[in-house]
Length: 274
Image (cartoon, rainbow, N blue to C red; front, side, top):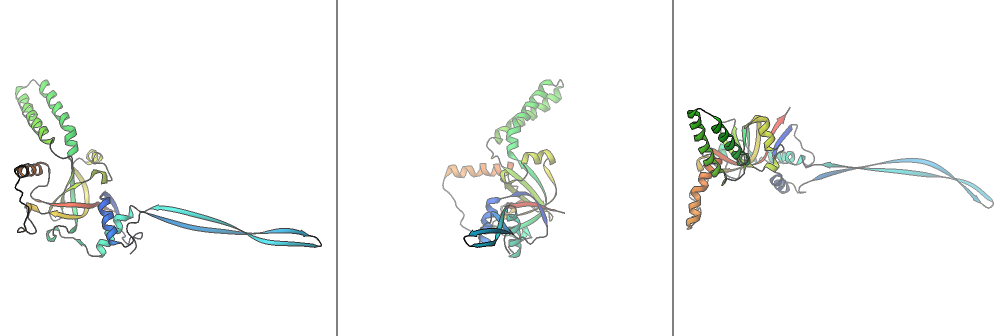
């Protein structure tokens, strides 16, 4: 199978493509490497006959000659969008994709289908001050003391949350539930989304409708299960680093992967187009 001739009969709408990882895998699976563009050349020729008169002393002659006009046309094609489709075909052809996530080991490529929601932590960083300001205005304008107390408690919670958010990474996350009820957590590079996360939020809110397909690496089990629990995992005699373990677990609990979710690094997220 050649890269510029995908054999699939399906049409796909891509929401996310990790271009670097897709290219790295493609370069390993195809001997020619990654094709970035295709050039097609064609040539047409027209012939016409021309006559020439020769005047030589004592000789009068007429010669004919063929005149050839050649036209060359070149067309360049962007093959970048064929790259994920060629990779899907090749991985499927080689039997490298697992369909059952429960049988997957860490590092396996798995294809899952289901529903998803998106969470953009950067929006939380951006809008938290605005939420707090609106609550302050409402608290100032209300005359009812009980309502004022409720708003005051909300304001306190917002202020505490704002302090916590300052220390959290500005990641774009996807929570996914497959057709078997398995939960999967993914962090994606917003630059690789084909639709901006802000536009997704304005159109759908948190839940993105339709059935989506994700192919990616499994890199974490639910409930922190390990492939090899007896392996010599590092134990560092450093109080500062060990003290950070608790903070990192708190960060994960607040805004990261839940204990019930698999961890996945997605290569591409797409849906079928009829």
